[in-house]
Image (tube, rainbow, N blue to C red; front, top):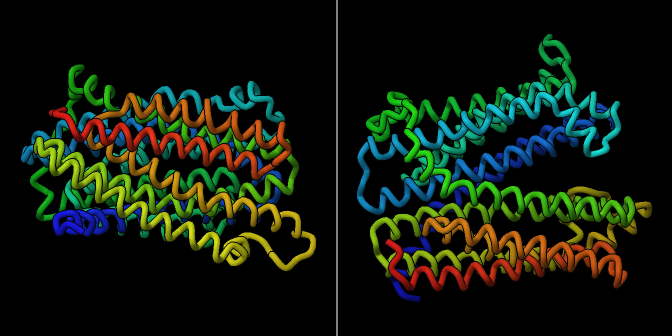
Length: 452
């Protein structure tokens, strides 16, 4: 291997590992909430699932938009524009975007019962969901503000701080959720409302902690992120949203595909749905690796893009693809070699009553070995393209791959050809494979031409 490529790969891993662990910690927060809510009973858990599904769809759009801070800051760093004013301008655009995005979202989520009614959800369940939503929705702004700050630390290649704050967030959420849901330490037991309030407080804690580091750290305080929060102006906001809007749409399209797939699984029966949920959770755990690698690729490619270094862009892209291929291949091997231990994390594989779920789960994990490689490669392609400030074409590719190829093919295989749950996952894997290939071709085209 070329020494420069090996050095770039090590740099990518040094940045990606804490970013991946940060994403895994955030997944742990959601998992903790689900474990607690499961103790309240099936009705409360179903109401919470309705609430979280709607909240996440809305939040994912904002997350995609605000993540535009990462490629913009990385480009500035590559251009050696490390002035505090330039970085503050981008951060102001990101944080003002959070405010402008959340205002209409809060109105929508406050009246979520109307949305649930349109979706045909049972009124009684919708009424319970509102208890949680009207506490949870206020956590959207601090969470998106945390995302903007996370991008700031990643662009400066200091992701360890975001990891530390995320780990502290897991502990804070575990204590807050237990106290507010069940009434620990003499606090009132608020049930669903307590779960929503705990998440809001956790997001506030994580945003405040990361902002505190940015303000007080001796090597970061000169950026003075808290000293100038004037509105950036129309031109600055237009540039930010031109990059971020397609990212937000891409984020929603990606999450909604799996929401649609889950609905399709429900048509196949409870056992297929249970196997699907287990497989999806395992894939989500592995996806945290891909997300960290993708974010690291955005930073390194963005820096080379800002420096107008075509060799740097090529080297960073190749390193990203090489490392991702190796790591996702290792993950695929683990899925094939240890499927039963992985299933045993979520279900008793020795219980005869679970035999059909286990059988379906084993089949889905075998397909997951292909899926995880395709998913990793499409994530890394997306990260490289974001580093090159190319977001509109990837949005179109994602739309076609998921909604024109993946889901229709999955439905054909599952229902017309009778392959059931395996057919849906084969369709999803094929759609991701098509997206990964097109992203790779797009990356190869863009890094070979002058886009600066």
